[in-house]
Image (cartoon, rainbow, N blue to C red; front, side, top):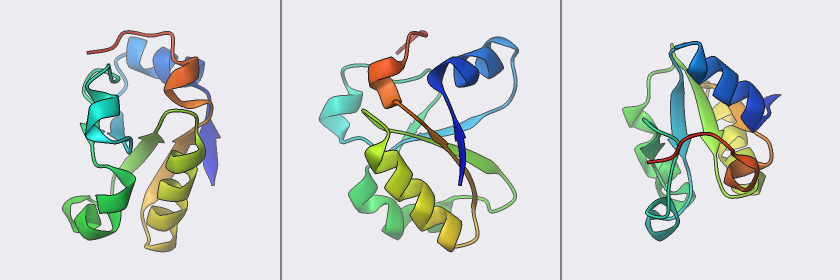
Length: 98
C-alpha cells in the first residue's frame, strides 16, 4: 500500500495538485477540523459507501493517527481502488483545517 506523510500531502495541496481525500474519522472528530476539501466517510460506513467512489481516481485516506486510514486503504485496495494512506494522521497534520 502506498503511504505519504502529512508534510507530503500538504506539499501537494500547496502545489494545487488535485487530491481526493477521504477522512475516515467519526463525524464528531471531523467537526474539530479536517483537511480542506476532504470528504468524511467514517470507517464503519466505508464498506457501504465505496460504490460512491471512482476506481479511476486515487484516494488519500486520513484518520486521527493513521491506523483506521490504514484499514480503510486496505479495504479499498482489496476492492480495486487506488489508495494512499496518510501516515501519522491528523495528529501530525500542520496544515490548514476547516
